[in-house]
Image (tube, rainbow, N blue to C red; front, side, top):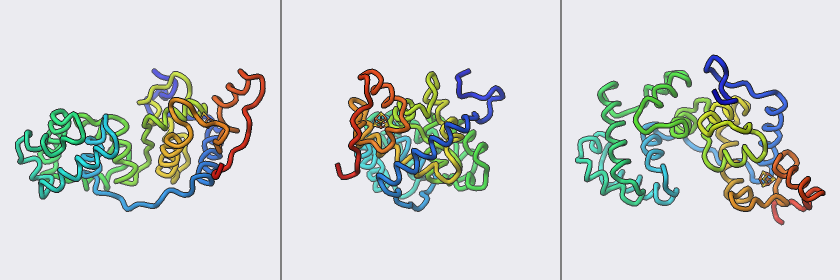
Length: 250
Ligand code: SF4
């Protein structure tokens, strides 16, 4: 059992002090980057297939693959009826075409065989845990893919932990040492206050791209450095705090 798993296998229970730290970080990040744009919920099946296409590739490539798939086939039913080679060809810009085409076919087959039509609309009526469990039962659907569909397309409580979120969470001390990426999804979901899951996820992804980069984080510019374990430890190693000069325009 990882440190983030509750003994009964249910939701983890982060300490109140850590929840307050996450809330302060959320406020500071939003003040620095601005409020993430509101978005219309996408169709859940499109979100699921788009997320499968995004695995192990860049946003640009996966968006191209998704656009080609939609342009080539008039419906998800038509994708299911098409030979796998035709799907591979359509999604080629996204990489891993054979693997992803087989996953898409397997997902569509399962949905149609269970629900009678290629749609995930039924998940809207289910509660979050049940919807998550069903999604996780699909081939190639891990915790991140399920959380993205739950969070962005179904409006359920979930928190997707991508490479940026995990790195920042670990550096700041929001995600405990030793907690796996998989377990970090439920941990972050419990840590973040209701209604802030989607915005904070987007803020952390942006922060990871702009300042808290994998190679060399730009800590002196960071709006949450006062809450960050990595920053404090770096200051101790140097025998003094890092220089504080942050502002958005710096
Ligand atoms: S202080 Fe540095 S390591 Fe900490 S969150 Fe900011 S950029 Fe990342």
